[in-house]
Image (tube, rainbow, N blue to C red; front, side, top):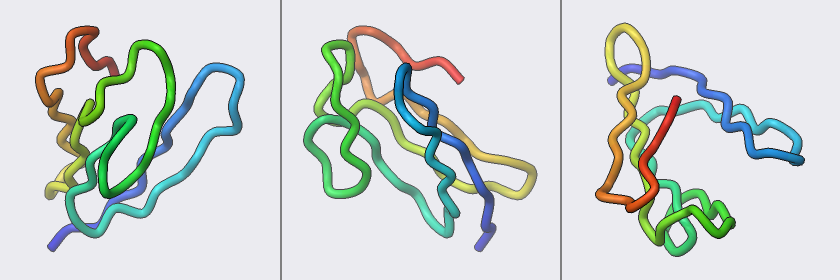
Length: 67
């Protein structure tokens, strides 16, 4: 399994550096990393370490996901 670091940046907040050892879901209501905000879906996106980086997958949010 791959390990990668990823930095999560939210406007007005201190950046958070994650060590990804498996997939993680971010959103307002999820089992992993809770991210609040008016444009964040309950289950907004998934991060998964892969051989040469991090795969970012939008989970059908209405506002989309940017990296």
